[in-house]
Length: 263
Image 1: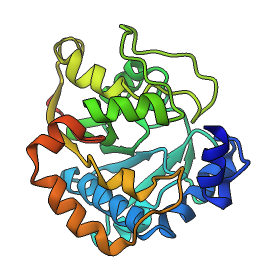
Image 2: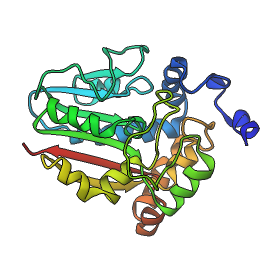
Image 3: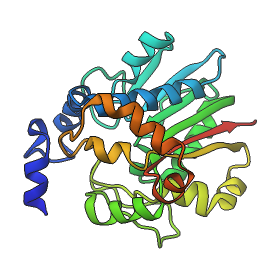
């Protein structure tokens, strides 16, 4: 399996450890050189930006190093994004952990992230910081892996990140910024244990959970496998999977998630 993964891996990151900052920096090039994956990220970024309230306040992106949200936002709606990550990479403003944000109380109108939350080893600690730093009416919005029968099969047997569903603790030991993860964490916290989360954080309202993309991301190859189809197939694939309730129910790989701070 490792031999096959090495063959199919993008040449630019082949041989690099996943926790090497260069891997994160090169991922932006992988996305932009894969037309289908680029369109997926542009859709994800469009969702994140549309979730941000039209009020004064700062916008923080967590885990910015491998993406281009700030560049996308500057072209689409002139929103100013503060880019952060856990290690220094190109074009970051802040190096910080999600559980210890260097911001004053109630100064952020949004915290956004793409495939980052399931890497946060202390998710409760993050939400305590989000509660402190996000103003009332502000949001936490994210794109995250989601569990369905198809995604559970894929994430269990064909993905390098751990999937732990039979745990009741939302913490895990951090061995590295990207190698440490629990793909099930968003599903556990916002679906399986939703009532428990809402009791602990009554100031947060889960406004949206929308499972998406049972096909498109897999076909794109993601960040780990070279592209399989051209970008011109994107609209057709998205139309098929967006209109099939069966595909979404049993096969969605990701979810759009948004929480609003009520008070």
